[in-house]
Length: 78
Image (cartoon, rainbow, N blue to C red; front, side, top):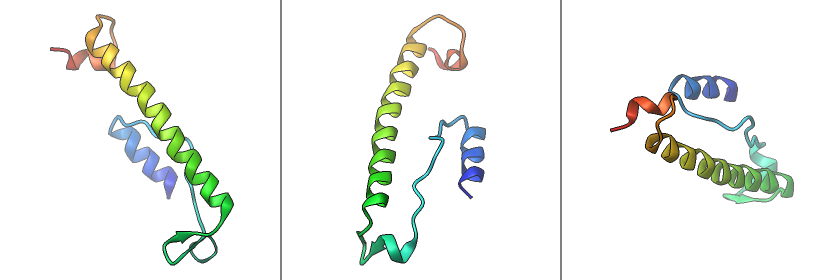
């Protein structure tokens, strides 16, 4: 399922992380609380990577819009 979602995201020119944070409903989350340390660590890694790489991509996008080099964002320059 996540591979199909990544494919859809790429078709919309989105970037996606190469992994997801899967979990088993009853053994890792109970009463809306994370009860499994491994799942908590996977989630923290996912959040951290989305924040870090999102920042990198956003900075590059800004530079590409302000620059003169050819690239995907060139068509969006004013």
